[in-house]
Length: 117
Image 1: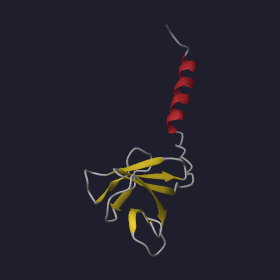
Image 2: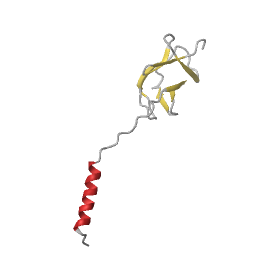
Image 3: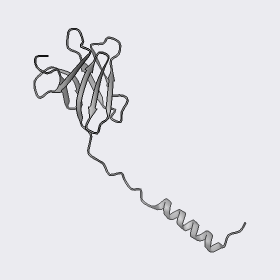
Image 4: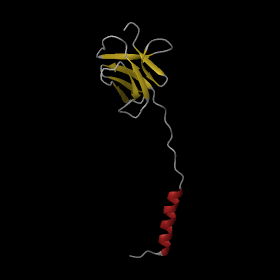
């Protein structure tokens, strides 16, 4: 099978033009923020503003642990320090301001138990 030389020249120019085209950078969207944190017996689950759920699994019966959130698109570093006493099967954590005892620290956000809990 033979091709006309002019046809080959057009194909080569088209291909080199595609290769030389500047790459388009993705447009960054709004950064997802932690919206809610729930303390379970063996995990802490964080829900983000984009709907993603991330997990911080508890290693064994550790009262304190840290690592990187797993199972989601936000692999952020975290640290957990459980309050003393018997762990409840499920506790919703509230975002803390300047005071309070943090249970979960995630970037600049701190989450703890609501007062009186």
